[in-house]
Image (spheres, rainbow, N blue to C red):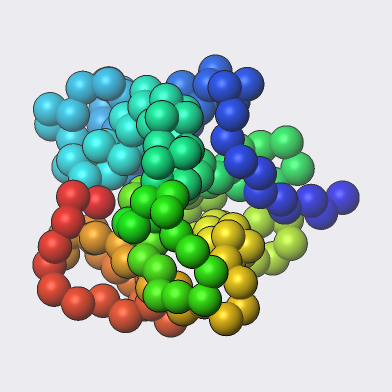
Length: 177
């Protein structure tokens, strides 16, 4: 049965997120040290993996009211295949009929589905970005204009390529993720 779905991450997902692996550098190490970024060739991915494993739940809870921070989890049947976090740049004082800014703070597909397709035949990265856009658009009315930004390091070619492939424009070499 094909079943790709997304939901908001909650405290009940904490244990599952602690084992979420998305860092290709950790995957290729001869001795895997998921909490130690030394000798990891993809430090930026290691930082995102550590964020989802250790901080995503707490930050989503603490930022829920002031910044409408959302943690999204993507599953293929029961398997956690992606995670993303986004928040409002303008805070919770957002009113209807205006211009709003949101930041895609972090997103990652699980190591075992990177560059791969899910049971629906859709690439995991596309399904995750579609979930993010769906959740963001659900936060606003059709009359609102919403600008979504994501800061991506120049060396993070997989994320830059993914965003470009799905219609996001890439400018500059900014950001931690």
